[in-house]
Image 1 (cartoon, protein in one colour):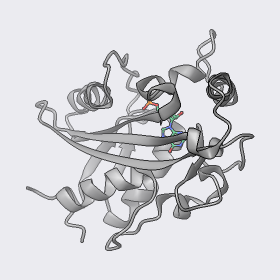
Image 2 (cartoon, protein in one colour; image 1 turned 180 degrees about the horizontal axis):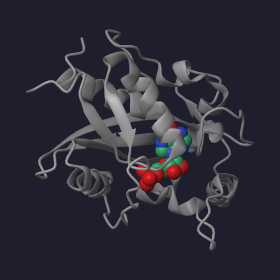
Image 3 (cartoon, helix red, strand yellow; image 1 turned 120 degrees about the vertical axis):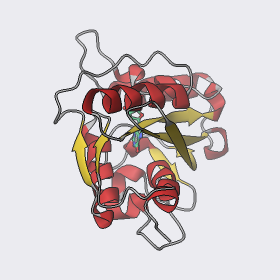
Length: 215
Ligand code: IMP
């Protein structure tokens, strides 16, 4: 497998939180990461029903438009008591009619559904963040890297670091939420290190080992 280290790749996302995390994860490898935003690319409609399908739609659109390898991230929060919802619709739960996103509203909706199920104890509020990274070449050839982070949904939200649903997600083994962690703590990983914590860092670690020559 050829190495991508030192090459330019497009991060097929317009999400500021994801772009920041990718820049942090890619920095040690000397990859020049340009975002879909930098190229003025439109956001394709995510019509898939799986993380993999949506990740491919985004990565292929960016690779085809730029002629460069593109990496996308399709991710979401899967809550066990809600049969895996919001899942691939995690971003949609934050959508307002005017097209803006409101994650407090999305977290409140999740909480209302959990309360409706009588899920008040931590054991009834388990779930995971999932991230599927798709690396796609302009010819449509694709590889996938999946990472998951298990945890518990807490209420009220805690912490103002991070993005999206970070303030209500407490990863297993910690007493703080992703929203209360520094970026470094949330990734929980550096090249050459065994463990990673967040779903995105776990997926990225697999990518780095497969395509960046990371230990
Ligand atoms: P999509 O991949 O563009 O469909 O959006 C996934 C959504 O999942 C994001 O808009 C966030 O709300 C949420 N999400 C994904 N990863 C994270 C994370 O690391 N922290 C908090 N929320 C996340």
